[in-house]
Image 1 (cartoon, rainbow, N blue to C red):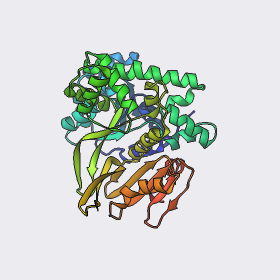
Image 2 (cartoon, helix red, strand yellow):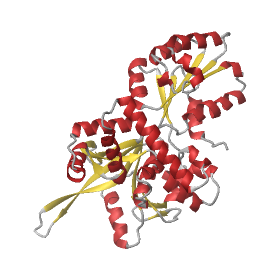
Image 3 (tube, rainbow, N blue to C red):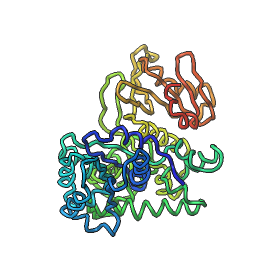
Image 4 (cartoon, rainbow, N blue to C red):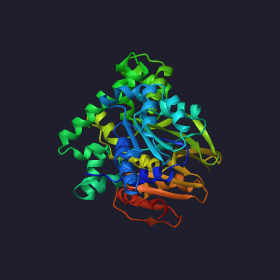
Length: 417
């Protein structure tokens, strides 16, 4: 079964032979290797590139252990380049290559080489490469399957696909698991044996139990405002443990560096500035979040909010939590000020959208509650409410658009309907 991931493939194609090192990053098992070693490889063959001009090395393959040595890797690649035509160098899991920065810098000096690498740790790759290459690295971030990608590859109706997606998420190999037991066991094992173990080993975490408990708390409170100090108080009152906010911040950084969770900062819409802590944290894959909680906390409203956040990021938007102040008068005719929250402020260049995730608007009061923050903004950028109901598009007199979650996710142009 081939899953088309045209969004990312096209991003690679647009960067082909741009003189930069293309760095494909993302959480483990999200499809980075498949994108480069299958989809991009086949694209190159289809456009007439000869097989011997595609130099691929999967560094997590035991048979390539010797090529994890930088000198061996350089020698191997240079021996493959025998003419002046373009050679495509593709290294999978490049963080396993010792002194990989020096090796990649050497590849840059090969005039007829076009270099692509994958890695699973943002700090190890993105931060280091930005410094090391001084603008010569070009990052392509890949995410687990969007709902649109998931539907294109799964069997059954859109309703069935939505139920599965809300429960098991979009890691590609989920589609190869037949039963609920197989899917849940895969996710639970993956979380504990791959993700957490990788973070603990890489960062030399001494107390794995603390890390596990932090992940549980974040999973339980997905989409809630929090910060390290608040979490430290939770550990003290609920877990009866004293863990400093500095230690918890360090753990949270480990989780974001591994792409397991993502932080949405608060943004003052009218003041046009960021507000400090607290912030919201969302899981990169909702199936992993559910598995972490043994599939016990299946609140579809929080799950839906997490999925919308991920979809916006998949589409290339920077996503913040919006804050807008509303002024009024109390009974004594004194001025009052109230902070209203807009779930998401999505920006991409000059584009901006304000989006509310509303599981249901069953009463006029509930509809007013969801519309109030959007009406208080006062600018002309588009305002959207996403609901659980299967609504195509509905627009009120103030220009606020209401759309059903499945239509929002399945239509790649849904922000502009």
